[in-house]
Amino acid sequence: MQSELTGKVALVTGASRGIGKAIAQRFAAEGASVVVSASRLGAHGELKGTLQQTVDEIMQSGGQAAAVACDLSDAAARADLVERAGAPFGTIDILVNNAARAENNMPSAITSRSRNEMFDMNVNVPVELLQQALVGMRNKGQGWCLNISSRAAIQPEPPYPDSKLAAHVIGAYGASKAALNRYTQALADELVDESIFVNAMAPTSIVLTSAAEYVRKIAERRPDMVEPVEMMAEAALVLCSGKHVGRVVFSRNIVHESGRKVHSLDGKRVIGDAFAPGL
Ligand SMILES: NC(=O)c1ccc[n+]([C@@H]2O[C@H](COP(=O)([O-])OP(=O)(O)OC[C@H]3O[C@@H](n4cnc5c(N)ncnc54)[C@H](OP(=O)(O)O)[C@@H]3O)[C@@H](O)[C@H]2O)c1
Image: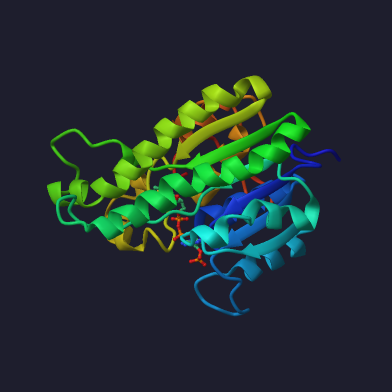
């Protein structure tokens, strides 16, 4: 049976665990050949999640996947990532810029070095990877790029949720994601006439990955503030298979707007609507 991404090749960064892994699994379930990337391959049996585990799980479910290790914080190492990612299955049709760096500290206290590293990972890397992928996308006459953003890009209105401190410690990280959102819109506008569709999407609330471990206590008190990783995976599918362009959206909203159901990561089960209670 023809699935939505049959014949497409996707590169997903930060796919050894968390949201990136879920997107890779969901895309593979829709027939994409998926190249997953993270800073290292990792050994079987590691607790935190490794690239090799992502590949193994996708293949066990009948999908196609390959891993390319790359430390994206290293400008020289990332310079040929898209070329290397094209080796297993061919030209990249879909690029998901998911890997990111977050340092939680007061905006006035964060060091120049940390700020530079965050803006490098969260702005320069997604733009550079798209620049690399553009060559192949232009040859094919179409392409998709999805940048994973954050609600932290928007400063919450006072009164601040939980505490003022919580709203401010994510400020510098949020500023980098706000820059990513703006750059996404600029690229989208520039590239749409070439049928290259660039969008950004943030989780509507908290996805309990290893990166979000520090907010697990808030999640226990406020389960309504947690969203399943399947929501992000479904939303990514919406934005990487259609003709949306220049959107900077939250996951639940785009799933709702599309009228889709949220599926399990293997694509086999419907687990609910975008705003279903408990999802
Ligand atoms: N979880 C949430 O609630 C939440 C909320 C808002 C936004 N987001 C955004 O969602 C995205 C994914 O977050 P997540 O929670 O899934 O994170 P996560 O579980 O910590 O996973 C991060 C991924 O990025 C990879 N990575 C980190 N540094 C890297 C580097 N230097 N080079 C290459 N790969 C690197 C990690 O692999 P290795 O460590 O093996 O390299 C891992 O695969 C990020 O863009 C984040 O800003 C998440």
